[in-house]
Image (tube, rainbow, N blue to C red; front, side, top):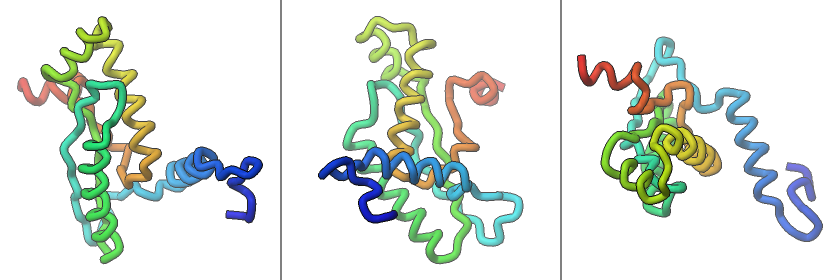
Length: 146
């Protein structure tokens, strides 16, 4: 970072710095793992959050940060860490939130997932977004009913 690059007047512009790094990580595929070519694969799976609120809360950040740190540790030890992310939107949590704000879940869930994704990216977690799972996707849940 160049001197003063993230300064807006006398204030540090964290939003500009975060946006720049998120764009770089996405464009370079920093956290993408080729599972077929990985010589030392390591699967770092976390529970998929319920996108049943307006956004993440501190408990989400607490839980996912610890697991992400573990994944980074394994990456530093030479492992090809695959850290997927997804969203589990089926269940009473999503239904109750939809009822609370009087919005159909079919419209609410995609909006919440977009917000959660934006928030996760701002955390800088090393998720491989190419393998995102959504429990409401018919191509996903059909296998649970097969």
